[in-house]
Amino acid sequence: MEISELAANINQPVFEDKLTQVYGSDRLESAKSRCTEATEGFRLTFGYPAQALFSAPGRTELGGNHTDHQRGCVLAAAVDLDILAAAAVTGSGAIRVLSQGYPMTEVSLRELTPQEGEKNTSAALIRGVASRMQEMGCALRGRGLDVYMTSTVPKGSGLSSSAAFEVLMGRIINGLYFENRLSSVEIAQIGQYAENVYFGKPCGLMDQTASSVGGMVYIDFKNTQAPIVERVEYDFGGCGYTLCIVDSGADHAGLTKSYAAIPEELHRVCGVFGKEYLRDVDEAEFYRRLPEVGQRRATGPSFGRCTYSTTTGE
Image 1 (cartoon, rainbow, N blue to C red):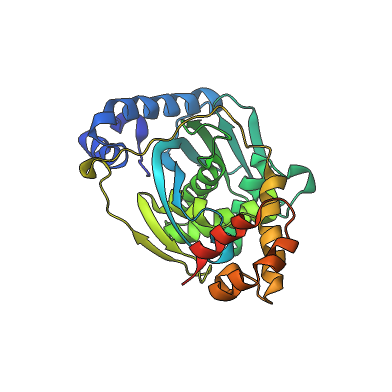
Image 2 (spheres, helix red, strand yellow):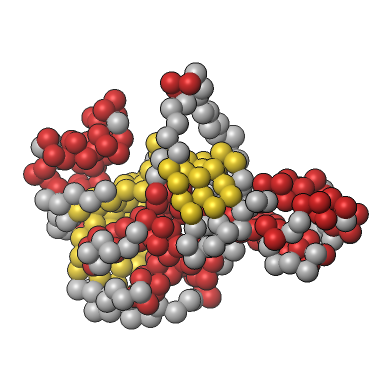
């Protein structure tokens, strides 16, 4: 979402229509309040008014988690919790981001190569997104951004706050410096690149795609360069269902190494069959050679591989 001339337009019908499309009519007033909070936070932080508002939601997986990095198929959905950002262009040569409740992060656009000391930080994601977008033709050197963010996506909750952050940075740069040339899937791929190469987490593409496309989506990752993304129109409430996401109080923000162990182990399993991805493994052969699969086990029981196998097949 991008809305210009913010302060004067928050209570205007065109602005309210856009907010209603994103948040629904029952949450219009709270959305307007958050927009006011974000624009005022920007002004107090940077000393001048913001130019535009952007948002990116968290996500939940409905089926197929961890099959995205095995070229499988997933069903995922955006949730009604998001990161909202007020932003403006500058000529500072840097991107400055203040997330409410956190210190300011500043990334120079003069140095866009991965920085070892930035692994697992927001700065790494910002630098990675900026670097990839510059490679794609978005001229950023000598330019800059100021961004103020406020979030309702709990950090480390499993709702992909990091993916929402990556998508949001991609949307801001795409909107303010690249004339919105990039598609939602391209922005998702940029976010994955930043997380893989700069942040240091070997994630698949599900989280970023679900956040960037929005709604409920079916995604086929057989070709990760051009995944098949289909919107799924389904009314949970109308069919008598409620999707409940429970906050367990646990925090997985520091589990990057544990996450990375999963694709590493699955790669060893694929080696039993001479394949690179589980999608390419014949299901009948997989079960016939299950004892060999068990011998490659490093962290979890063999039935875990069975789950991945049966959800990545054709």
